[in-house]
Length: 151
Image (cartoon, rainbow, N blue to C red; front, side, top):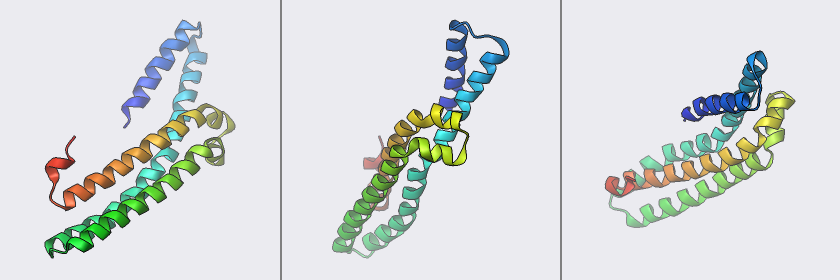
């Protein structure tokens, strides 16, 4: 999850050189863009962190119900757990993505908010989708369908 920062630094530096920026100005602008992107990452991870807590509750409940041979309970836990994950994830992603510049401005300087707002919008949606994928994988693993959980 950190490789994108290395790539951003490299490509921002190269594109700055092609634009004729050099020396301290190039380093400062590259650092500014990388810092804004890192700020966006901090907020984009919030939906993932929230939904990860759902897996800590859902996994043992599903495993216990499966071990007790309670198919109705398993079905109820799966549908309720996924429904809650989608609602909570959608709420977090929509707020994070929709309020991206304001969230960044809450904790960082205006320049970082301006530079990182678009990245935060995209990252929030991506992290939300990744979190839902994690919940689905947790459900499959807790029901002993590990092979189905592989990509």
